[in-house]
Length: 440
Image (tube, rainbow, N blue to C red; front, top):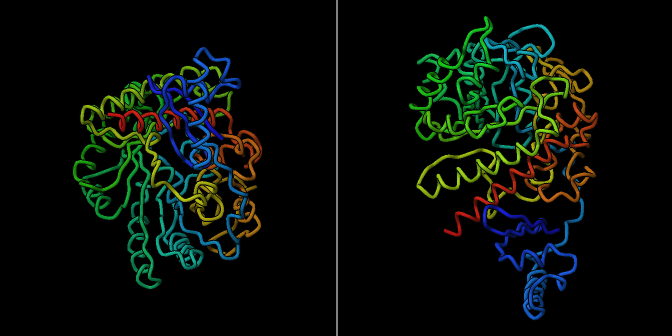
């Protein structure tokens, strides 16, 4: 499969299966994209020469390479669980209008995870990870800073388990940053492998969506707390994570504002809400969204040429040393190598399924675990999703988010169409940026 597109003034052809990317001249681009090249307004001998070069690339496996035969992702009996999202708090000090978790309580009661549940969850991870050495635990909510006692306990207990089981745990945290203090920031910088702080960009955008529980602005405290934490973080990994809705379709301005505030690692994500939400992104917004990603790609390209260091999460792809084929096929691993644990110890396929009883997989307290559901999620790959088979971006998104597919299309095997369209554009932009910079 060949996908040809234009980025700025460059003509690009990507061979989907081999991963090869070719920068073309206009005539070669026209020949590749035309059903009848000899009808193009070029001299016949020039067209023949281009078509001959195209055939050579095909013979070399760098163009129109064959797709791999579908293969099983793994065996559920030997599949390790390597990542865990610990919902240490189903409560929050913000009342974000687009929150998929019902402002923190996940449509249930506001609650905090106990040490007992946290201990059982980490024990479950140690056993379920089998021979896997490197593991990941993300503190999530709601707002995890509301339960720092259990967060600290988890890290301390986790370090004991590392020695006992000869494993390594990378702890991470996703936080809104409101409850950060200097002492907590120092502790997080010492103990968290990665920190994600939610900040939507411009003051008016952030405050319109992310008020405090008493309806006040959260922008200044989040911004200042994030700045102080990251100033002390050194080379430690972090992301400032924003969300855009239909009310800020000019989201490149939010990326720029975060960059102006001194943040270098930025992710601004599209909100995914049902169409009856006043903040939902819809098909009617797609043209504007596509144009905005193009604008953002141009901004980042020019910044890089000028020696800048703006890193936008969704434009960060590696064309030469990316994930192996198995990883590209299976995606994030939700439900079979990644699970989420609720404050009461219930197991779900990922953080976005928490609270959905149809997707309750078991409990770390009782030891119950639904292997059949794990096997169902393991089967969910680009090989089993009909819409993914002929998509040029399939190896970059790996079939998309299973939770979005289920919530909006009623099946983990049916990707969310609008999200797919957005991801395709981001993929083109990411490839375009790489080719533009390599051509310098």
